Length: 158
Image 1 (cartoon, one colour):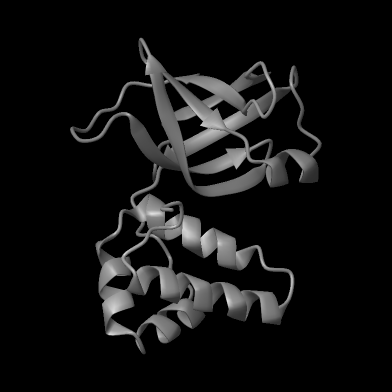
Image 2 (image 1 turned 60 degrees about the vertical axis):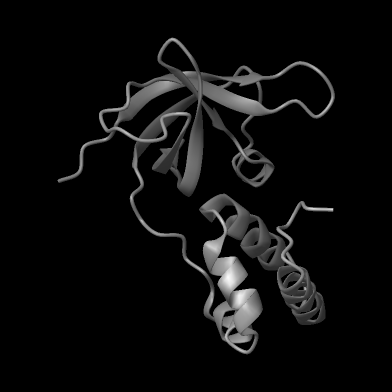
């Protein structure tokens, strides 16, 4: 059975200033070589499932787990709350929805650029498309993604 890397209660903090991140600070020492600045994790926060999240290295063995707005709103989590955090290393590959892959297969140049992007850059596009509220918006976003990929542009390239 998989053992959690962190299983404890922690206080929710908010970075000061407009647009500041809401997060929890965790003590963690990576056991594997590799990029220890960002570590992909999955698990639960107050019982709410999280997957393909990343904890960011702060310093001195401390990591920050950002709490996305959707999670905070759905479970009424706010600064100062104490939450149960149980997380595991997430070694899974990024899941690309079938509808996106099927569209990309019609555009080999876009597909090749997409496949060569980092997981984070792929995830930006996937989440942007998934956030569409209706089918027309989703289709438009997939088309815009393909146009940008054909130009060799990632999500936030100008």
